[in-house]
Image (cartoon, rainbow, N blue to C red; front, side):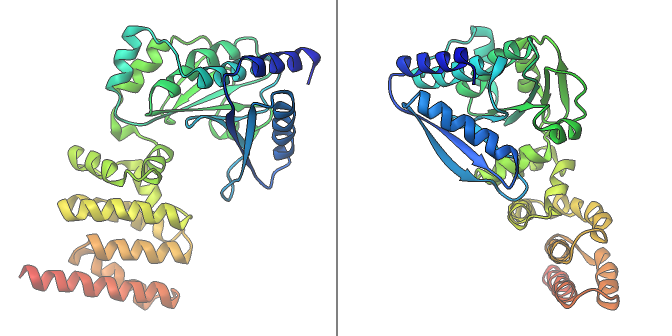
Length: 327
């Protein structure tokens, strides 16, 4: 930290009205040490800021979180420090003004949105973009923003095909590079089709206990969202479980709609691990009809493990029992 950076942090501490807490999530990752060192220096220079330490889930990257919906995969120093401190000040004062037209659009948003903002410490334009965007996630419960330093987390930048900064990515479907009008970003967020939701956005909605919301969206659209199928075959059991809860809700209302997952899941079946295979077969039993039985019998004949075969037998029994009841 430079003397100027230390001076800015000390000034922030004198202006904070009360104590404020930020979350530091650490992983088995060398970059965790850099984020941890920054947070330690921050709390030493600004004692009103306390640090809550968490352990990252599996392969999640280390991060610093401000409030409920602003996260940094970054060490916010250099040009990134001032917007970071401004976010802390805004959170502390709990007062922010948004232009009336933008606020009106924000009030109409009912579909969660996840904005990823890719920056670099040496970029003179990135702080302007961060300043414009971070108020959105403070005034709207539906918007989350993640700031990602491309130099420190190049794998995330590469995964999102980032070639220049600042770049804003919305739900993996929309992107803006360079100077961006806030009104345009908010307009796209408020007008986008829920079918375009990314798998990460759907996963977050389910994690927050809103499985019924996702199910209702798909029932209203009369289609299974493409990104949702990925979750039903996700490698992590809690994610698959959440997706199966959504499917259970849809099945109760519209079994034919729920059955739309069968074809894409069958394409994924042979390339996933055995526990995932077993859950896919379970879904077949819950949503399928006689058309899926030949595939289930093939599983019984082939060299799958006993748990997968047991799931296939149970699935066949469920489908046949439903057929008897319908008859």
